[in-house]
Image: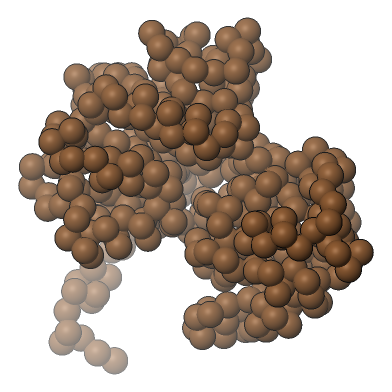
Length: 418
């Protein structure tokens, strides 16, 4: 077996943490039991580029139970949990290529390692795996039957590829499942982002001006959690509907040029580039804290911040102090990478339970139906989405009503009125 990890001796600690996550992922456990009987992924080579965390480890266990042969690399240089990578390699025999803090050269070396096996299915978080594949001749990956994509940023990239007619194989957009983005993006990102900021800074959020750039589901979650900790939330948006929604939710809404002067803490959640730029850094207060919770660190113009600064030092773990030529200080968290994974542990297992159940069932769907699919980006089938919601409710001990025959008839007719 091949792997490239920090230290195999960390496996024992990783195994215990994976066990803790597994205990909080009941939906995946139910999927695992069925996979163990049916082996729907038998003989499938699956290469995954995901955050190497305890929750991902549980997903890997389920896919392996279903018969898949697995190769895993990190989808972010700072998101890897080294003890988890060690346990996956030692205890599960999975070829893992992930080291927390790896440089860009190593990051892509690891991506190339999981692609060298010529997988049948790809599983991506951010679309770097697919992007790398599409920079090579089509014949190099002729065996690929399909793939899945975990996050908003990746789905945006893949839909752009499909729109240009260049996507080489079908991909299921796991992020678009209701049981993913309504919960993972909102509650998971909201809680884990605040967790990462507090671990990095020990900052009291109550009373501070907390700027959220982007009011999609991730931004909504971050804003809600910051508001819950008594911060004064300011939302920056380019979409008039989302800006109006943020206003109706009770938040101040303003352009980033105005928010830059007012904010104490900034978080980007847009999936776009250069959201906070040179002119915004120069306008910030002394001591402003800047973090990113979008997939890539390009949301922050870090090269511009470097050029503006006369001094840089790491003052706390995951907190870099930039002293501008004006003497004011800007604190960048987690090198601008995903703060919830760079400085904290990512989303809680109980919410990733649904997201990764979508991944597992979408991989099964792709293995079964790839021949019937065009080279396009598809949503998770509605029956899978609803089944995951049903299983999650069952695991929580929650019961709901069913429609009566009379109600079903009413909803399916047009004749019955008042």
